[in-house]
Image (tube, rainbow, N blue to C red; front, side):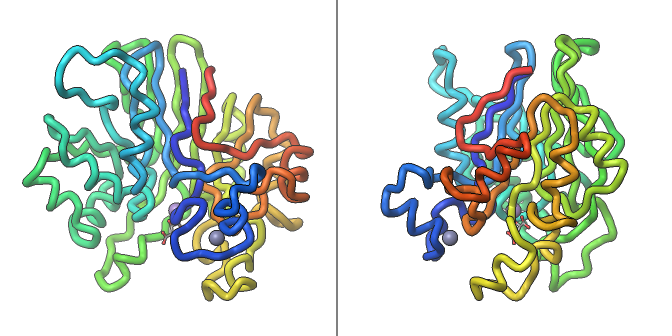
Length: 304
Ligand code: MLT
Ligand code: MN
Ligand code: ZN
């Protein structure tokens, strides 16, 4: 299985268009330690099969160029066979609009709740109906979906439940109680490789920790360093936890329990531009590395 991080920043990217925090300013100044990053997305494939996009970020157009490693034999071709959505947040779904030029209906995998959000709130599914069309494939926690043409080999994905939080755009409606947020575990049935992806971890329950421990590679929520990160900067009134993201630091942060896991690769992704781990020579970045974990960057490829 090959996993390629297409975008390692959280919503807004790095730098974010209207942000003048230390990190964003360092990036603009060309600081080599503050590498630019696009918004949250990755691609996965097994056995040289088709790529699947996991979350469609607003930066999807440039991100998909990273998957064009085959010589085309026709005037039009899509580098992806489908899109999996871990939630309905704008940073994970705005890119669907960019994919409207597709020749075939988009194959989109997501929960019923996310489908409702993308129909009634941020109504991209309604819009796409009149462009490429959409073939929605329901995937709820516990269900396993075969992503390859072969029934026994190739790539399989399992969605798992995470604390639910409906996107802001659903606040004015009455959203169904449902699975607004899931994580994905990918299994390569040829190599046995297991990768778990969870860009929005609000807590680390025993069942989630067990799932992570049983993965060869984890790609997890690296959004905020501190719980009050945005409050301290005066850019939000909400804590990291209130936004559904467990911060890394502190006795009850994610870094301590994650550092104890024995997975081969442990990687933070979906990193907000205010998080100092984005600065390669920062104390916080060094703390993450000393804990045996990695900070994702765009283009990072992992083979398992
Ligand atoms: C999140 O990661 O919590 C969302 O992307 C936040 C947002 O875009 O409002
Ligand atoms: Mn996000
Ligand atoms: Zn910033």
